Amino acid sequence: MGFDQIVAPLGTDTFLRDYWLKNFVHIPGKAGRFTDLVTWAELNAILEQHRLMPPRLKLFKDGQAIDPAHYLTPAMFGVPRLDAGGLAVCLAQGASLILDDAQELAPRVQELMQSFQDALHTDTFTNLYAGWHSQKAFDMHWDPQEAIVLQLSGKKRWKVYRPTRLHPLKNDVELPQQPVGEPVWEGIMADGDVLYIPRGWWHVAFPLNEPSLHLTVSLTPPTGMDYLGWAISKLRRHAQTRASLPPDGGEAARTEIADSILGQLAGLLNGQSVSDFLREWDANIRPSPHIRLPNAPYEQLSVVTDDCRIRLASLHRLAFSAQGENFEFIAGGRLWTVPQSLQPALARLHNARAFTVAELTSALSSQSAKADLFKSLNVLASAGVILVEKG
Image (tube, rainbow, N blue to C red; front, side, top):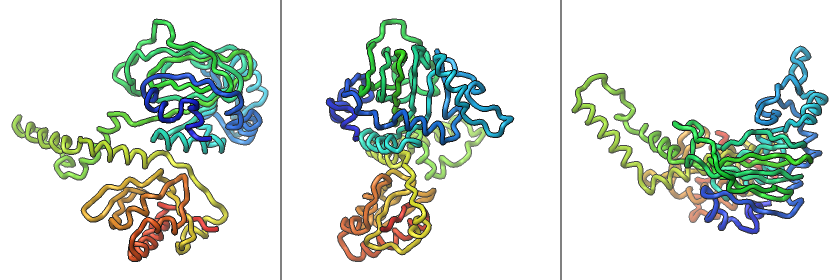
């Protein structure tokens, strides 16, 4: 299942044009289309087989967190684990169960998150919500990230309100005031429905006395504050901005320093730098770990050949910046410099897909560049920047 199917019948282009970062939308869908993302049986297995406790796993009822002592075994018996009896009692009394970062425990959700990242060019994480009675988990609130809700099973009643402060931040200088008017939308999220709630829009959800399971996909696209932070970090290249400020140099000296730093910053803030920032942001989207045991310890440092498959290990993509006749990129905590001739091949590398070396070399025009690519891949593999897969 891909992102275009999630927002059908709107389609990705219409969703991006009319709703993304602008307005909420409720998209009715066919019952059962999300059921296999996380089944009740799979949730049971996750709870039984993993050591989960707050804040990863938590119970809430009417806006209040349930004391973990009610659903975890006592510490005197070793590391706390879920107490099945206590958990059942809490849920029977109206609590909702919330599991954070569900994509790390549910493989099909992990696969779906890749399509969200590719479509929306930002990081994602997914929380799972399960409810049974009529008590809400959280009071009316707003989230500091974009949210796309997928109703997996059962139904919930939602109320959505317009924002009272545009584009609020998690650590803002001013908190939004609660809305006082009527909701802009109130309705039922049924099995197969999708609800998009932009950052800052207030909302509250109620179970309807039946088992309900939904995923909330949270997305964190970059803000102007992120762009400014990135631009300021680039000033580390300049000795003057790294230098300590003198405690007292007179008003003229202070003005000169301020003008110099502002001039350097202004030189960075242009349309091209926005493109550079967004390219780096996309490159650093949280990747999925791809583990291949027992073969990886043999394959990783073996000589790279044409039939090897290569993928990025801990980056979504590589973000290149031109430096004269070379290109630079940051990976594995290091700054790498490669000749311009290798950039078309290395630009194909991705975390979500492994390419054969033959596919990579097909992007190169000369035999010398292909020979250089083999050398570079071996070096990158030894540094853990790329993963080498054989067979």
